[in-house]
Image 1: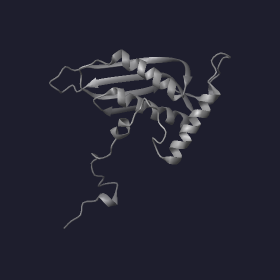
Image 2: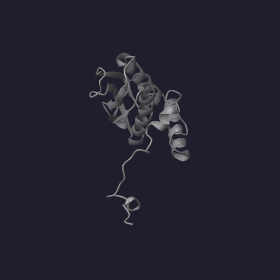
Image 3: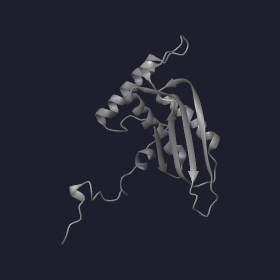
Image 4: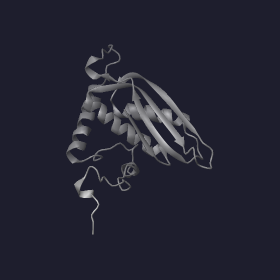
Length: 166
């Protein structure tokens, strides 16, 4: 699972991608043991090019959004450099396994309270629309990042967008 975007501030987009990826994980009944965070500038720009990534290994495989946000923030803090205009940022969740196939030890069991919280948030977002309940780390700016204003027309897949002859 991954998410990428053309952005200027990865501190806004990375949490939004993590929140969405965690929701997808839960929907698929999976958990992740690794989070990869990456950022890059425009390689064709006059400015210096910078690209970096960091892989975070989680102690316990999880789909708990808060734990994934914390890991992604840790990774971003290691690679983020002030003064660059970033073109792309993204996350990849790796080491995915089926939630039902994991055998935990007595000390590494996931919290039942966390599971209930995540189910509640997912239910509310499904019922009232994407982003109805969100984490403060994601913020309101992230909701407008994936705006669909600049999409090209879908002449081959949508009758409503066919060119009209005069």
